[in-house]
Structure formats: structure tokens, C-alpha cells
Length: 90
Image 1 (cartoon, rainbow, N blue to C red):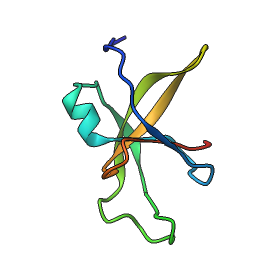
Image 2: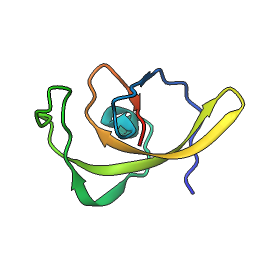
Image 3: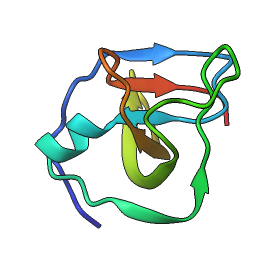
């Protein structure tokens, strides 16, 4: 298992998002080990149109801490722009 230093990231909690997402720039900057997906994941925007950056091809496993709770989750990697992390409801 790869271990990284703890980092604090502001996240958008989005109850209409059906997955967890992390911006590609974070994974590059902090050298996360990416796992290639067996199947591409199509990304749709709120208007139901396909996202212009294309399908998701990688994911990463991370520990998420909130107060005294810790959970290991998979996050899909894509270009999010200003937002660094989106926490959805898988």
C-alpha cells in the first residue's frame, strides 16, 4: 500500500453526484499511484451532456478523515477545474 503525507483538501459534497472524484492535478502533484479502470466511465454534467474532458480511465484509493471517522474510498480521476474533490453518494 502506498502511503502519502496527510493533506487537507476542501471538498464539494454533492448529493446528486453518483461517484467520488479527485482532480487530476492533485494526483500528479502528490504522485498518487493510479489504477487503470477495466472499463471507461462516461462523465455527464448537470445538464446531462457528456463532459468535454472525456471519459474517466483511472481511479485512486485514499483514506478520507472526518473528525474521528476514517474511511478508505475509491475516487475517479478527472479534470475538475477549481474544485479539487467531489464527494458524491455511490
